[in-house]
Image (cartoon, rainbow, N blue to C red; front, side, top):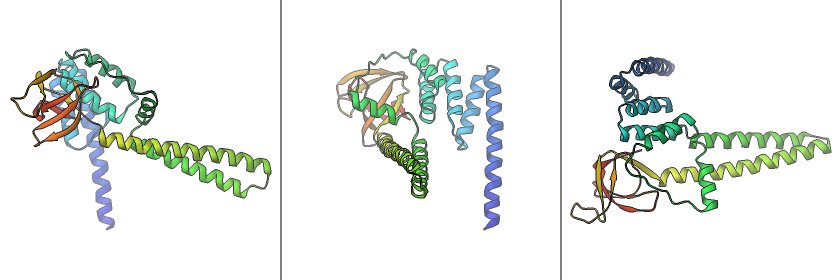
Length: 249
């Protein structure tokens, strides 16, 4: 058993070290202007199971340099899932979106719902879980201090801060569950086809309701026979599109 653990640790650190070397090599290719070779190097890193916001971001930059709108937006979005507040990713994604043909104006969400969704999207799910654990530990610490304190003033302070930490835990836990709900219900994709007609029904003979182009971000609502998906745009439009036309995030 001990041998297996040691082998696992050795393979883990060797794999991580190799991944860092591959990342440096890919970065060198990018800096030299070898974008096609850099893309292959970054994709090899991903194929080896080493995923990070930095890899996705640099891969997106390579595609952006090649004016490949769909792939660049796709990988910027993938990077943003892992680092939702990174300004470099947000700025470059905005530049890439300016290259798209479709200019989709989103419908504003209701005030309170918008606030809750924005708060939940501040951190990834694991980060929210970590915040919950930290706040609970802080609450336990203040509760223990309150129980062991003999001074009325210290008891009062520990009670106040303990109550605040408990309230913070409840809020963070609620946002964690809401973040999980959003992750499970909001499935997005990026259109890779140069141009695609969105249908009223899931078949080729159906009426076209509107047209999308490469780089458009769509929300996936449901699927039909694993070949069609019902989509929704941020402006509220809905329709059916072939699964071959997009790549899910």
